[in-house]
Image (tube, rainbow, N blue to C red; front, side, top):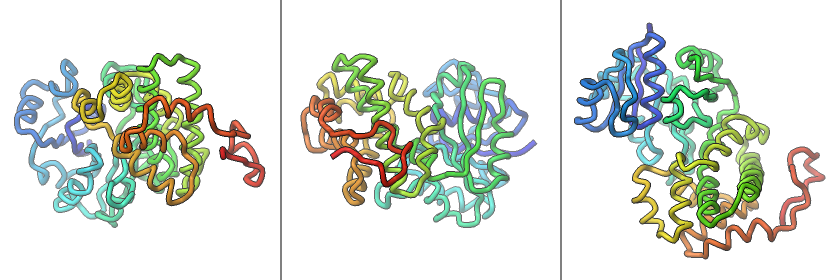
Length: 343
């Protein structure tokens, strides 16, 4: 039996903690709210995020970071990107320097454009680092729906350990060593989920959604290659898999933000209505700026940025799908010298 910490009391942290506990491990479940800690320990459920989902007795919630991580060999970090670095610093005051740290956060740090694995390396240079990402709607995992995820790490020990911790009849973990590509897929797809929600609210059909998803995938791979990722990584679970699910269901927070925008609500009203952190709102601002700096053609991401932050019309982003001079459907199927992108 191992001692494992899950840092962050949201819906995904909750289901990950429960899978690990079901495999016989002691789980220290850290969360900020004192009242939620009491409810989890007394009721064995997380009523704020997953009401009615029964939690194993090996899960012990705590507000005390030292208690959560001091004896834990593996620490999952499941907090929003805006607070990620501060939380990791708090973790490393008490955890062993060579602890195994696994990020489940799908976002980009605002000030630095660092992905969460880079933040982990900066704050815990001796730690063994991994990233868990994929099409992982927590409510479906809680309902024992068949789900796949990906653990990415440059270290085989991390990949095999996380596979073992999270093995389940309904939750399967695949491996990858392209950490950057896996993280970018999880971060970028949030942008396109907002666009898909807008399109749905405007009455667009399945053909439009399919077109949005495939052109979004092209943008993700194009941007990923420029940033140093393997574009083929985006064809896996953490790329197209995550993109499809978040662009197809109102269970996605980012999709719901888009729906609210498409119905005429302001960004502030949409965020308030969803009530939980939607990483895509911040990610699109960072990615649009980086794409401009690196001269990466991303008409959908740029179009969403203009809607959210420059008050362009919503209809313009849908129109942008039809205006480019696209010469090639699948850019990365050809030799680089033959690739022609949209003008």
